[in-house]
Image 1 (cartoon, rainbow, N blue to C red):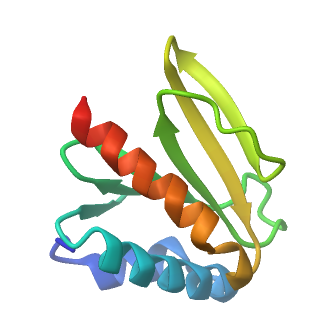
Image 2: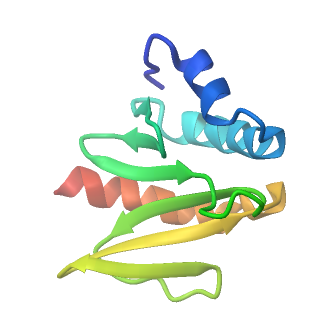
Amino acid sequence: MKLPEHYKNDILFFFHGNPDALILYETLFQQLDSAFPHASVKVQKTQISFYGRRLFAMVSLPRRKRDPGLVVSFGLGHRVNSPRVAAVQPYPNRWTHHISVTDRELLDGELLGWLEEAWVFGEAK
């Protein structure tokens, strides 16, 4: 995966004071790096963004600081119907999905399948 120059420092700053979320992120990053070796990553103030031709996945911290884990988000042209997913439709035929990840077991094949679908959706636009 293509990383920005100061990636390590940016990641440590992003997860400062939240070591459990950092561990979850590192696990997810390894999975994404294996599945999407040509992707790039950008660390921003409120989210970590993953790009192919277009943005296909994001990682953020929960809104409430005391909530554990990560929020993994991705965009698709349809709504995923799953109890794991909170979805919003910001534009017609565009759904943004948010999944709370509080344990490594939630970084599973189902989530990776949705992220692969989001990659394909972004590459086809």
